[in-house]
Image 1 (cartoon, rainbow, N blue to C red):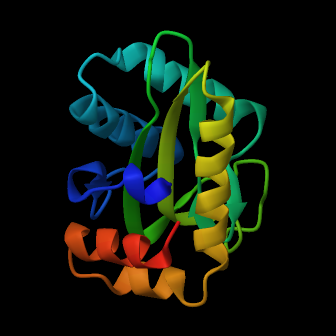
Image 2: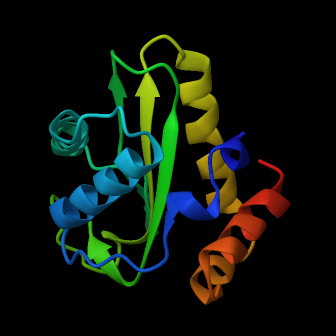
Image 3: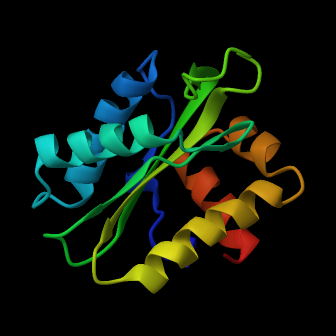
Length: 154
């Protein structure tokens, strides 16, 4: 299912942002590129508010900032890489474990809770796949990252 939402146009091969909010702004721009009807300020605010409730860092090196918006009809996913890592879990003082190198950003419609859960589940399955992180970080371009995700079967 996640492979239905990830294509090379949905990927930022190297994020420019150096902190969580800069990365969220950058990924918000990517989401808007994918779905021009999204409102920049609404998307960014929803992602930041969700992060402030609880960090979306799901494991070492992977964050999944996400939000539910009432005025959209389909889910949209963007993926960003930071080879140097972005500090994501501001509540944790251990830099080693609170840094994300792969950031899946997802906006969900209110009326598709099953799709919401399936996409999040698929991301967690990818994370548990042997060598997923190394393969993605060694990829040479966005198309190769798509191939890695597509070959995973999720």
